[in-house]
Length: 156
Image 1: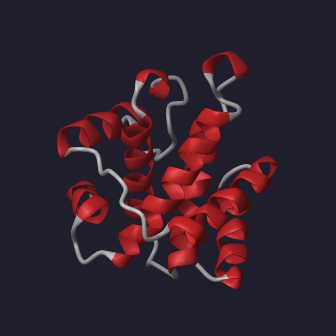
Image 2: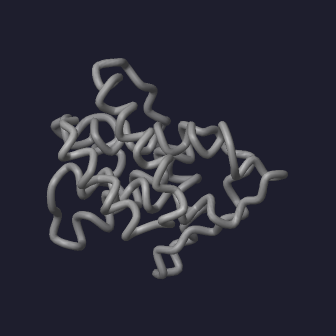
């Protein structure tokens, strides 16, 4: 990810999520730039669907339930967030890969906004989720229907 795309992704994330997480957005974007060629795990379809339904409740609001994800694996939570971002992205007419990454990071920020320190909402957990979400969103744009993009298409 080029620096101007990082900045665009960070701006979009601030629009979609919390501006308080600007440093996390920048770190996650930089992580994508530095590690985009590394292999990442993609959650299995069943786990992803279950997590997406738990987190986003399918009530039509598209807003995450900030209390359900605490016991879920970071890959599964990240995959569910990216699936929701891809759904929103496609329904909103698309945009650039930076827009998708920013939207996904903003969704992650919303998801973790209700978590306190005792829940793991701060620190390493939040940083890990943000990096995984940014990477999955980036890679979804690079794949041709496989990986997280293939799984996310089942939610649209």
